[in-house]
Image 1 (cartoon, rainbow, N blue to C red):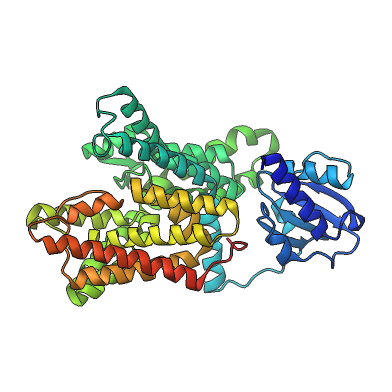
Image 2 (tube, rainbow, N blue to C red; image 1 turned 45 degrees about the horizontal axis):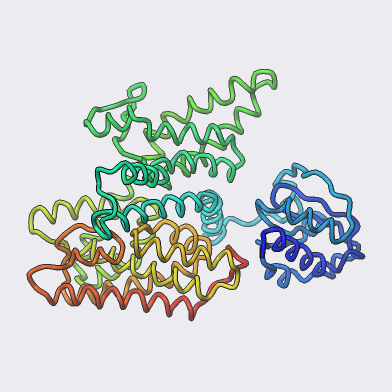
Length: 470
């Protein structure tokens, strides 16, 4: 089936579900939604509409019945007009605030605050998912064709080099990509968001961090930290930036806005970003690192299990880096690690389990594609981001299943005193890092990984997930 046929099929199903063309007074669209003015707004079955392929959601708001399609809305709208004989109109620019004008203000509770944070994260990260997958596939090709597997490409060949840095670029420049998508999410200037992301990974800043050169902003010390491939710092920065930009937009005269609003926004955000906001993850990460190392000293295998349960969350926030630094010190002193990377391996295998379960259990073709591609990227290339940001974070319940699997696998390996002797990858070949003098160590690592994978897979099948709520 061609894309045009898919859009036609979706449009026909939507029109039927809203009560047919006889029930439509008029229909138009914005950047993401079909907007119906219906004669009888009680006819549409929202739950049934949400199940239509290509539909992301539906709601009755401000007297309009809105069907959320996403970036393909114009194509679905064209087919809808053909089927219903409606006059096709250009897209309208509708302020998001107008959509929510009829909604009562929510009380700020722990649940609503958590939901707002989750919405902000998913709204910022989800648009970047194609970059994760594309970059991951490039890196996977390098691994498969490289000297470590098929040996078709040598590390000195031009193709190997180009594919390597092309794949790395997708992750290295994440702060720039997320600067754009976060600004769109928080209703700020996307280009200023990109600029703030670019500042965090500017070569001069990275060189200063690498060389240990101390930097300050008008006497305020800048925390040395490399932000390439990071996620949370730039989202936090742009969130704060959105309020700064709104303030300047209110107080600066219209004729001066184009010049002064971007300049003053960046001027304020420079010290806030480099001195306060971006380093917050580092400070929190150091506390988490100390906490888990202490937890293992007190709880033993149960501490490793708890780390296995939350390790994917640490990857998402970038807070696993301080733990990894502790591992490097341990490897150089005693020759093995039996805490952090053991838990990390279990968490990675649990992520693979939920990716495959998500692919098999999903009803929507797009979700099945995300699930299978995420699974293969993780198992072959060791790339966790598509699974975390494309499956676990948007749907929440997969995170729970992953935590259960990560806990069980890490608990087994903790009780079996499994040790990782060599730093490898997060893919299935990474298990070779457990090969040492004791052959039983590798066997228990494999068993623990299987436990993590199977438990997470089964857990997601049991608790399920709602494809219409992400």
